[in-house]
Length: 222
Image (cartoon, rainbow, N blue to C red; front, side, top):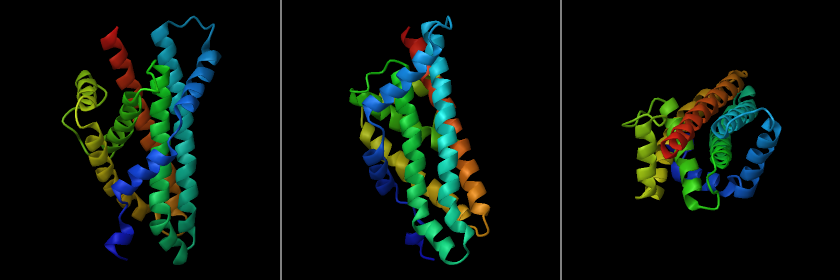
């Protein structure tokens, strides 16, 4: 098996996710629908934001788990199925997983009153999705995202070479997803279990990290 075949290209992954990421209006609608469900419960503004964010994390974590299991199904058939899982399933699953995480962060940005028509909101969502995924994979940055220092770090990215920062993160993600793709290609259904549980856990971690990041940002701006 060639190295080229095994590798999930980070640049290609980023382009795919950018092409299929949620539209601002749709992200706003998700947050608005949850807000309506929680109205009348006596929540403060910040409590409402946090409650909406928790529902968003739960929603997207379940969706990501389903995507991981489905894309791992090709690995059930040894031989041809294993090859398909690595060559076609790897980049497809990586893009689907990261799309859901970016979408989740966009919806949370809407919940925390970010203007999704502002490019900064989209950039923050990509930074949180990619940065959180790398944190979960053990690719430690200088500071934790869910901290005051993490908030300041991402805000600093917005004032500098933010697109380059996102590209670098997705380059590292390509390596992470390549490693997981090889595990998911294991025959006899093992890949289905790894795919579903990995994507669920990854998205749950990213979601909780992003929720804490937005909450800290909101408290710092209060």
